[in-house]
Amino acid sequence: MLMTRRKRKEQKEVAIYLNNKLIPQVHRLKYLGIIFDRKLTFKEHINYMANKCTKLIFLLSKAAKLNWGLNHQTLKTIYLGGILPLLLYGAPVWIKAIELECYKAKLIRVQRLINIKIAKAYRTVSNEALCILTGMTPITTKIEEAAQIYQLTRGNTKGEEAQVDSRMEVKH
Image (tube, rainbow, N blue to C red):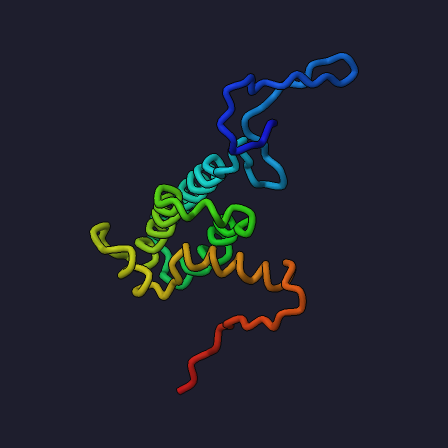
């Protein structure tokens, strides 16, 4: 795969041989669960992730209907343990992609689906209101937080003092 952001007018296909066999050139590559495209836009990765989580949410809601629905705490646990890690996987790598509104909207759409199920609300309720009703942090904030925590813990901070917010229980 030839990775570049340049707009070239010359030939984009490069012929590489290994043991006298032509290695085919691809336009996307899945490496450690993250789909890289040749322009590094991560469009394919975000689409794949959103579709996978949407299917999971619909399967969950289909199974929950058989048992007269799950309560909001169970759905919240499933979201925090199953869907949110899928959405946050590799966030430090593709964090710049959510600067575009179309990618951000796909991720918000996924969170909105599960928030509607958790709050047992109508589809006309706004996303911001759903986040408040369910007590969930908006997905874009969660992604930025995950990338920031990665940079502070494993990134190149060069001895800087890091201040990270952590969850505290409310007391009386």
